[in-house]
Structures are given as C-alpha cells and as structure tokens.
Image (cartoon, rainbow, N blue to C red; front, side, top):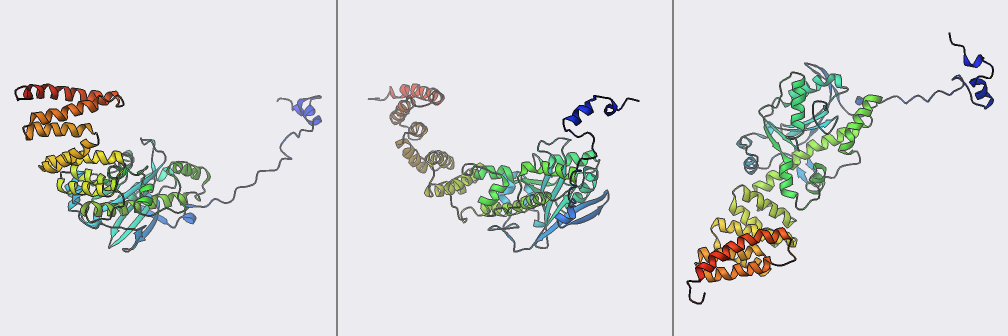
Length: 420
C-alpha cells in the first residue's frame, strides 16, 4: 500500500501546510444545492397524452372564430385559385378549410439529417369555426415515437400541409424520423403549400427580411411579446433542459412555436385575399403592387398584370424599379397585342436614355411600320448610348452584338431607298 504522503517528514503536505494551504476536503464548504427544477407541466399549460407508443406531453389552445392576429383574421376569405395555380396543385381548389393543417417544428439542430430530431411539433387545424393548436413535446429523446404518434393522430383528418420553409426543412426532417421508427408518414400524399417562396416573390424588393416573424410584424401587424426567443437559441435551450431538468426557459420556445403556427394561418388569409382580389386591396407601397403584377404576369393573367403595373406607377417607385417596371410592362403590352401602349412606354423610356427602348423602337419601325430609315435612326442612337464609357464593360458587350447585327441588316435595306 502506498505510504500516506502526509506521514512523511518534510513531505509535500507539510510544505503546503507551512504555506497555509489546507489539505483534504473536510474543511471545504459544499456547493449550494440548485433550486428545485421546474417540470414542463409547471411552465406550460398542458397534459400527458396516451398514444400507441406511450405518453407524450401536449399543450393545446383554441382561438375563437373572431380572433385577429394583429390586424389579420384567421381562416380563408376566398377560393385559392391563384395560389393553386402558383403551387401547381389543383387539389387546393377543392379542399375545405378543415382539411388544412399548419405545421412548424422546433429541432435539436438547424442542419437537418438523421441526427436532428424535432422535440416540439406545433400543428393547427380548423374545427367548427375555431382554430385549434396542439404542441407536442418530447420530454427526452427516448419518447420520440410517442410524440410522432401524437402528431400523426392530430394530422389524420387533414389533407394538406401549410408550412413556412417546410418543403425544405420540416417535412423532410419529420419523414426521416417516422421512417427511422418504421412508422407510416402521416402526411404522405398531402398537398403541401409552402408560404416562404411566395413571400419572397411578393416582398423581396421592399422588405430586408422575409422571415416569418418579420412578416408577422410588418405585413400582419402582429409584433411578438417579450416571451419570444430567437430561433437560433432554441436547440441550446432544449439541451440545457435535458441536462438540468429545468423547463423554465422552454416557455419562450412554446410561445415562439405557437406564434409561428398562428402566423402561418393569418398569412394564408392575407395571401388568399391579396391574390383573389388584387385590384380591391389597399396597398401602401408601389413595390408590392409591382411584385404582385410580376406574379400575375408569370401565371399568364396578363390583363390583371397590366392593370397592376400601371397602378404601381401611380404610387411611386424608386427610379431603378420604375424603369425596370416600364420595361416589363412595355413587353407585356406587346405580347397582349397593344402596340400603341407599348410604343408610348418605349418612347418615354428612350427619352431617358434607356438603351433597350431604342432597340424596341428600332424593331417596331423595321417590322411593324416597314420604315427602315426610322429603324436605322433608333439603332444608331442605341449605338451612341452603348458606347458610353461609364457603362460597365459587360453591358456594352451585351448590346454591341445586337446593335452591330441590326445595323448591318438595316444598312443593306436603306441602300435601296433614295436618300437612305
């Protein structure tokens, strides 16, 4: 048995004592015990739910029919004809309101993959005119199958998912978790309406962010309370809970998740109104109207698009947006067969030195008016503008080939014209 160092003369222990350093732990004050951890039941109003795979914790809220999220009600104001066309899913035209389920997950990480799981899944559905929200929580990863079963039962009456970035993140992640547990994916075959790509289309030119929380505040008029936590914090808060057993910080996570689900329902209402009745809506910003016009143009609704472009002009636009919009509308008017309107727009843009407008007028006079002299005039003025040294090199090169080819052809045509 090794000799006790403190029994040896002039040992290290003796030297430490001589220096006033205490040896051993008998005199140390034990650390203060942590206060009793708060369980999830004491932090969030919810209960355990029996499923085929065991118990999972669920918190539920019911929002009445007259509830407004900010200034926006929930529900659907009209048929989703334009949304169905944009989503390439005609089934959305036929589904009743009760068939939609709004889903959002809070996860153990933001990268996805088989190592990432959803510890909180919020799902909302319409029932009898009210909006019912259920949030399924995983006390620890060993009970994941019970959470998944709870979500599956709640989704059973639905036929369509509404998410925000859910096609890229939430749905694939949940599919992975169900398959790892050898369980059927409850939303397999559902219609899936992801609102994020549409939000980007409509508000990317004006808003600095298209995050759901930002849209909630700036489009729906519903700022969040002090309970809100940032999305990037959420995985860390859950891991802290797993280590400590204290659910207190998770109250903000439940609030964040609940507001995401409710905001999606309100955003769908707003979009359904915006797209079903675009000319009757009150718009504050011309950029929003132009973005809506671009969407309708891409969907082949040209008459609506032309009216919206013209409305956007009248509301004021930043200069760069103004001339880009003039260009789009002029091309649209040409496609619609309204050449007079297109020519007026080209002349307006040409007067401000826009090269494309000079080229379009050259095309118009050559092919429509059969006037190669006027066409040559507009092509030469385009050439003068394109030689501006202030233009970026790539812009000059873009126009040079087009202009040189056109000049060669028009010079050949005008040689046969007296005075040409």
